[in-house]
Image (cartoon, rainbow, N blue to C red; front, top):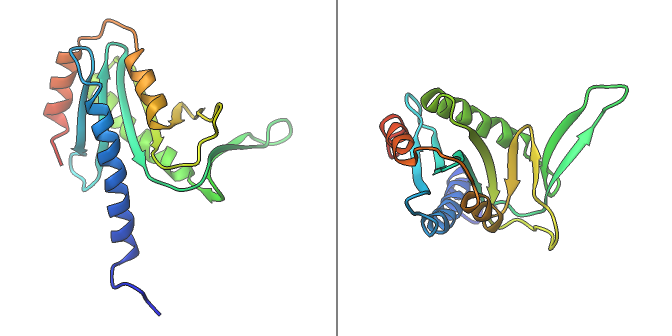
Length: 176
């Protein structure tokens, strides 16, 4: 018996939107002359969007906000006798497809910004993070929580022309 007429995909989207907004508010608190944040950017020729782009002196961050329950972990298999594989797990759920998705977004951003460093991040809003440690990198994607992301953004060093990069990104990735 169904308790709601609402589709599962609609509920998942609404839950995700709340996470995106919460992370967006935190990122807006970091905005300054040296950190610019763009939210909810449409991927040209697609219905897809990029949750957040942060431009810092050290480069551009492509940030995908996720509001999943469970503990994010990196599951590594193989190595010596067979190929090494890495899986992003959240609780018991295989979320490796999220890594693939943010890497596709990074490719699109790199096409626009050229040689500017681009860092992908999956930021899990309500996940069960341990008190010590917890953040990790898989296939170049930072997997972390909002406070850790904020620290990395505010300590990013470099001499990037933040304003010029923002203009390029804004021209190519319109607000969704």
